[in-house]
Each structure stands twice: as structure tokens, then as C-alpha cells.
Image 1: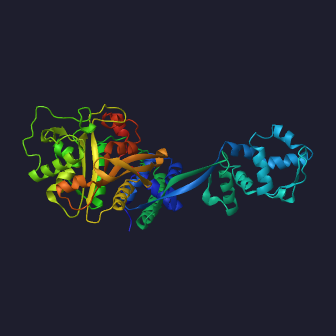
Image 2: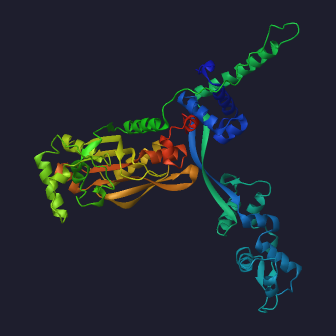
Image 3: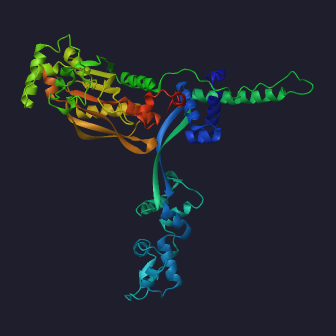
Length: 503
């Protein structure tokens, strides 16, 4: 069984042919051999993956490169080798003169003596006369040390893979890594492409059709005798097409929703305008908390709430909790004020309070508002992603597991957590993710378990796991931009430059 070759793009055909020849190949190698850009290869690979013609595997490879002192050692030799060479040339030269000579930097001689004598056994103690070089050369000086073997491997190459090293050389890299500025250890993610069985059959058909096309082109070359014949190049480049497409943020929202749905979550939505009761009070944000002040929150003036903020029991329970934990009496008028929601959690909490589920997995992706100055890192209106899980035996380990799986499905493999504080969760955690393209750990979503002060007044029986964060920050990392305002600038040049499919 094969895929219809005529339905494949020229880039897809070229990728299939190269992978078919090599069996297994990296994206970088594909780019070098095909003459295509990395972005073209990635888009082609993504399309072929969707068509089930290729397999993509990700792994981490370790490489080594020489640092400043390593390059000097390659040119002039390691300090311990230069030391024994100097002693062999001038055995009567005192250590003091050796130290003053320009052959060694001020911090090299002591280390060179220790390594040559104690580690490599090239030197033996000869006498206690400090005015002379009281070390003599041993027979072991003819042996190549592991560090020398590794340094020599870089004679004609700039980078060596860990898999290319022998056990002897691996020992040398370990020793060199202990020395400052000799060797750099580089860990990078490697994406490898291989063919599925259908892809192998299709690649063979692509090669066969290419050979047939070449023969056809040769037989139909224009000549003086047959001026009406011409060559039709089926692989010629076409004019750049600029079709309409959805906004990158819309695509990312759709991807995030698909991830949640694949994990068994159900989407919920709610009003952008909320009462302070659900936005703050029910979430145990005391009425004298700074976050409720005008400079942090958008309050609606001249608009009255036409519905009851909650039932009498819920209001009484929240009032009791606040009066126990605040020096000021709880004011229902303050709770009745309308705000543009500062997060999507009031919608979540009201859903749990109204439905009282024994178990639930819900999520929302919605607009929230903060009274902040718009800068390259902050917006006053943005999207918040929120995931909620409740069940009888829910634990902090479940929460970390859900959050890790969510990140993994986004293509983020390295995740770690540490304790922090949030007003309505306890315990609370902050997640940090490792972004390969910038080689940094960055903070992303916050998470925690709803406090008893939140769940008990609403008669929520089971633990509630919650996590959330800003969508735009995730989009900035995905799209490689450093100014959040770019996402909403509607610059045609930038929108056209964003690839539709990304690895």
C-alpha cells in the first residue's frame, strides 16, 4: 500500500526520497542535503507525519567542544606534558625558575605537578633540594593520558558526540570537565525522522516516478526537427501563495483545547462580568486585600447587579469565613460590586458549587482583565488557561502529573515544581519549564489545591486541583517573540511569516 504520489508536494517528495536513502535522518541533515530551509523541512515533515508516512522520534544527545584553555592545549600541549618536557630539556632548572618562566600561567604549574606526579605517575620525587627540580621523569611519561587522547580527537573536528568516545576517552572527558575552561559539555534535543511501512513504499514509488520523469524529459527535449515539443518541469517552483489563515493565537487556543479534551476534560464557559462575591469573596480574597483596589481591578460604575449574587446559605458561609479571618466586618455591598473578571476561577467555582460533582475534569480558556500598564511583558486584557480536577482521592501528586502531561503534549519535556503561595490554594506550587530553543528554565503556570475556606462554604466535598496561567506567555515562547504586543499588532508581514504547522 502506498500514498498517492501525485498528491504529494515537491518538498514532501524530496524529504521522502532523502529519508528513504538514509533510513534515519535528522531535520538538520535533511536541510543540508535537500537545500531546503529548516522551516520548509519542518513544515514538510509535519505534513508527512499527518499522512502517516513518517515517524518522528525525539532524543537528547551529548556533545563536547573545546573551551579556551582546551584550544590552547591542542596547540601547545596540556600543562603537565609541557612540564615534563621542560624538565627533560633542563633537569637542573629550579622550580622557582620554572614558576617565573612564561611557559606556565600562574595557576597552572601547581596543578601540572600534581597531575603529572599523582595522577599520571610521570614524575617521581628525587630529592628534598628545593633549589633544583626535585622531580625526575618516570618511564610512564611515554604513555598518553586520557585527557591528551581527548584533546587530540579535536585536531580536525570542532565537536565530538559522546557516543563516538571509547571508555578511555570518556574517562578523559570526565577529567577535563573538572578543569575550568578546557571542555564544554553540550546537551541538545535531536529530532530524528524515519519512514513508516507506507512511507517506505511511497518513497520507492517517488524515486521510480522521478526516474521516469527524467527519461520523459530527455526524450522530449526541444530540437530543430520538433520545435513544437517542450519539457514540462513538474517540480518547478510556483508563485508564492498568501492565502487567508487563522491567527496564531486562535491556532494555539484550538491546540490547547484539543489537549484538554484528549485528557478527558470538559470545557466550561461563563460571564466576563462577575460580582466581587464570586471573583474575590468566595475565593477567600479578603475585602481589605490590595488586589481588590481600583489600581488592580476594573470595577463597573453605573451598572447594578440584577440577580442574586448567591443563595442565602452560600452568602452566610462566606460571611462567616471572612469575619473569622479579617479585622473588618464582611460587607455584602462590597461583595455585590461588579467587576471585569480578573481570572476565570469564579466561573469554575460557581460551576462546582452549582453542580456538586463527585468527580469532574473541567477546563476553560477565557479572557480576563487586569488594571495594568501595557508593556512588552504585560497586557490589561489577555487569555487565561485553567484546568480543574476534583475527585475523592485527589492529591498534589495527581496535580503535578496532570500538569506535566499537559506540558508534554505541548512539546515541553522538562518540567519541575517548587512551593509558592497563592491566596486560595494550599498547598501551592509554581511550575518551571525548560525551553530548548533559548536554553533556559522559565516560570509558567501556577497551581494548587483549593483551601478549605473556599470549598467548605460551597459544600464541595472532595479536594479540588487547580492550575492556570496566561496563554500569551505560552504563545511568545512558541512563536519566538519577546514583545507580547506583537500578538495583537495585526502586522501583515509578521502574520504571514508565522508557519501554520510547527514542530
